[in-house]
Image 1 (spheres, rainbow, N blue to C red):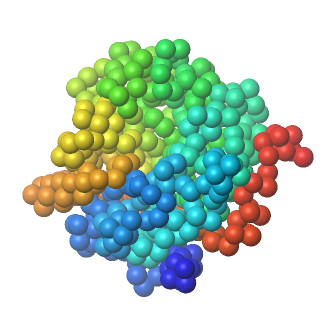
Image 2: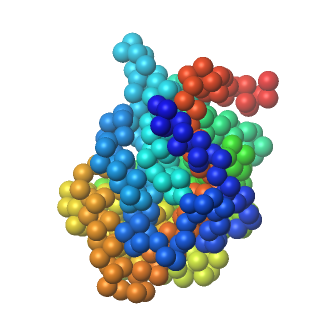
Length: 408
């Protein structure tokens, strides 16, 4: 554990530039190990685009070595990575195990390449951490709340995540619940009204920022009006552009204008009015023309999981298929790629990105742009897990939802 604490201290004391109003790609680190983006080896550039999952409650040695070489940029934790404290209380999280796992990820990475460590902790049916971590209901339960209350709830959630060593929460959901037959969004959305979704989503993102946790608005350009689940198939939205502007895009546009979204997650959904030939994740029209040029968003664009059948029909069983999707996503305009499962897919994706960059100067430039943008975001908020169990217990589980809502 001494090695973990020493490496972690290097991350904490690095002179990292403070967050600015925008989320542009300039990278400036004052430490002697600062990154020179233009001259970084292409294997590192492409590796830093990968945001990966793994099995088990300890960091696998091959993954630790990949982080050490600079060949991974982030990790996402799931329930399979979280140990339980007691057989009698199967939902109760071993806080120290989670914090030490995140500390091991931090320690494995070079100090000049701080990893992003993320988790899905929306509340309701989408949460990876049980008690004593604050348990919140689905976002729909906040639909009638004052935005100030939602901001306080998000701040409380973020403070606990930060103590455990997470630097990103994959929230808020900015999808509008406009289709009652939607099998995957539903009560994960704040409301059926786009103005309410925008208002509460902005408040939630601000709360996370106050806790020094990166928000990730999802699922761009919108997953609320599909009748299929992109984990299982490729949904299609047939509405015209005027309707998409008024409903699906409205919360994203407002949150981007408010400057509260350091990152967004894409939707594996085809929008006929934007690009009838490709899901948004793999579409230059969606990621470049719409997101960058029209909406002028300069934050980090993270793909949804490439194992999902919306972009990989085999569901990840074919590693080469996942790799092809990864290359297309970066080419389209994504900056980081979620590869949420263990196995050969992440290595295959890395190899495919490197090979494409070596043969195509334009793709190499796109990869370097993505790397720089992602590193700028990660440098703002490096993970800082607390590995003292007494301090963890003081920081995590001290607040209840009732006390936050009533302010008592």
